[in-house]
Length: 305
Image 1 (tube, rainbow, N blue to C red):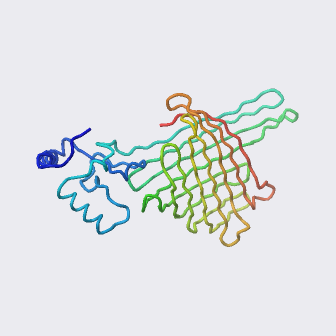
Image 2 (image 1 turned 90 degrees about the vertical axis):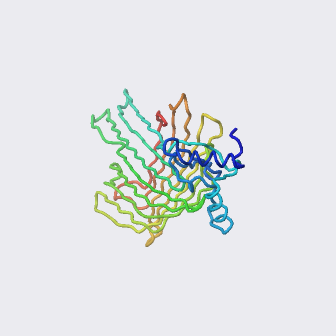
Image 3 (image 1 turned 180 degrees about the vertical axis):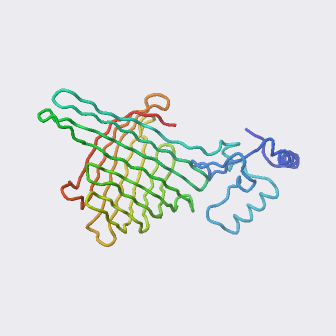
């Protein structure tokens, strides 16, 4: 437990520390940083203050006073020299091979990474699965799965819970006749909580652009994006998760895309894990001759970092 930062001797010691800060950088994280957001080693003096999210006269006064005195209440300090922000995520592989009455080959991967700052979050990821099946009667091999997706998103927190974001997503589904679909646009969200056991964040997007390139041509949509995501860890090695994405056409609410994922992930050892998820994809107006609904059941193994 460090000594109390009060008294003249303590102030003289802090003044000496500030003089050689170049060789021994010191950063103190305030309580508001404890929710998964940490400042880097080379933070400036005002970065270490327990500043309020909503500016007020009293908050400004205490911030200025702390800058001049160098004093921060012990109760507001949760870490000393926290590590700089780094990417955290996971990589997983899945496969299916059968012989006998049917011959099936399927391989896929998923990857996801997130980097978190005090007021910002950047995430990106992608997945791809490809599978073929051979008809034993005719000997003809057909493609059963040809799906890929990638996304990139930047989020800025205006308060501890409310944030705005800008994102880009691209999808491909050869079996459904979708050459590729791109979705871009800004949005806003509200994060209920963010902690190691669980995370929940619904989002509502502003009107964006969705472009569908299908085998029969291309279509441009102006769509809204509604998104919901929750992670929950009921016990230490097990995590349950669920996401829902709804993209209605502003000009025609009867035309929309709906994506739902639900799954469970169990940590086996260190960063190694097993994962099982169900994917539900619905397109209210698919390419002619294609079905509206696709459902996938995926079992995979991977490594979290």
